[in-house]
Image (cartoon, rainbow, N blue to C red; front, top):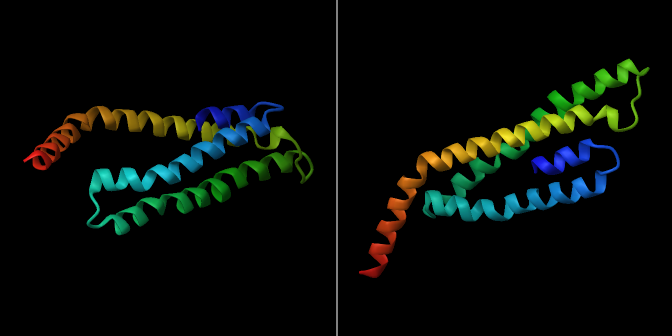
Length: 131
């Protein structure tokens, strides 16, 4: 998604960047239930999955209204109240890319810190299935 937002932020690449962001966003929604059930199990999956998915509307509000809206208003104010073109939203896409990059970095650090723990859980599950 980082690449998609960076590509959109560059001139003339809206369609390519939109496809990349769309594929990544769709992948997130199709992988999230599987990852949730693998990490937390299926006993309370509905509740846990709904809590996790609440991040999307909360993040959408924060970024759409609080961040992007204020950036657009500032750009429009500098141009007489109306703003057209890439310059109105370029900073917004770079902010999205930075937030996504932070998420990737955070996920990688979390992976490194928890891989032994989840490997031991997997080993216990395999032993339980074998006998």
